[in-house]
View 1 (cartoon, rainbow, N blue to C red):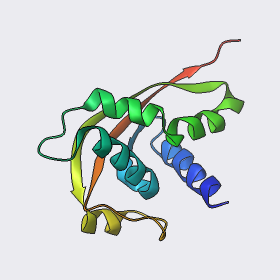
View 2 (cartoon, rainbow, N blue to C red):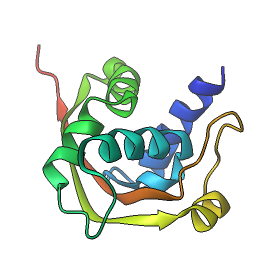
View 3 (cartoon, rainbow, N blue to C red):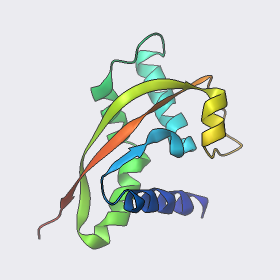
View 4 (spheres, rainbow, N blue to C red):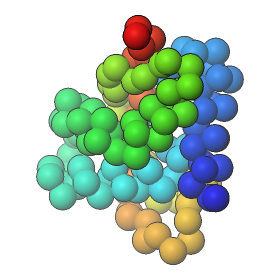
Length: 125
């Protein structure tokens, strides 16, 4: 049930943006932590974050993509591409003040944040 509420939150957030299709990774705390862990395993978190394309691939393989595709399916829409911009590492304190996080998840010292752009396409049958 909690996962469904988070999916619903993302969907409402997209609607509020009037389909500008831009959202902030930090608003979904658990997803931001999962993405940070995957990115850190591959590239570490030292210095400037430069692996934008790889971060886009991590997001495309994440539950963000599959969950939103599932929500958009009844409208014959799907996510064609995920891109990121303005990637940086937010500190734990600011992250926790702006995010909702499952209390059982360990929060790293720094968490990736970025703007996520979603290219939506209409499925033509």
